[in-house]
Length: 373
Image (cartoon, rainbow, N blue to C red; front, side, top):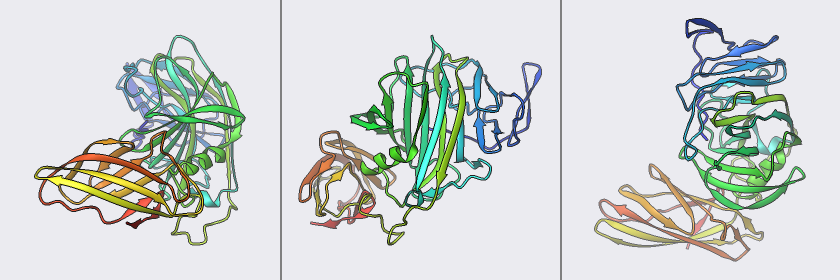
């Protein structure tokens, strides 16, 4: 889900005829109420709590404590087949220009020797929400705007809601089994790990989830961890939901890639691409075949390339294909994500055409440049 955190405004806000205190960057030594849409407060001199009411104009307030926060007012409501109303949360790192005090993030994944976190939640009944732990990554050490990769850990899901995308399998991490979803919200890619039943507290390795995402071909070791966050996505109701404790520690000292500009073998893959097209006056189809020319299996792949001017993808098969400007991103489906050495994976799509036809000339698989066949 998109997490807009706009530029901060005044430290006091007039609402319903009364002044509501809003902490913006200072320490919250005593309980602090935040009702400003994107207001935030620092706790423990280390973490930032944010109201982040991004999906509704209705009022939302949180009470910030020394260890977390509680939702005290939540008047917004959204259809369960759409986006939530907000993402009140506590975070470590940098998020939309707001960095927690003294953070060592962003940090390159290859440089991380350990990343651990502990979280405790308090849940309520009769509301529709998820308890979500977010891990954000980007190819650059980004401190503002939307990152390209969002890892979501759903520790509790209440009501008829689901993650972005579709189910691609299951995995065992942090001593539990998770259902894995994969998709895109149009602004960033999302991999979600959904618990089968509610988890009220968890002490775990954040790096385990990052490594699993990397092994699926969604990132490489050259990417940067920018922030880790814990909170709630409410759709309907949610007063009383609380993060009662949060901690996070990210330590450097990992091994950098041999060449920092080239993704290591675990993130990229040796590959060849065969691109076969059929065009007519105002449209075209393309069949794409990826061959693993390396010595180890590819577990999850993302192929990126640029279409020439005048070409627009309309529908696809055997891959999830999206287009932003001229850039096309194709991701494996559940049945063709694993490609053995010497093996192939194929997908195709149809598009519209304006002007003369030409095929793309270069391809990148999981961050590694492929040869053409």
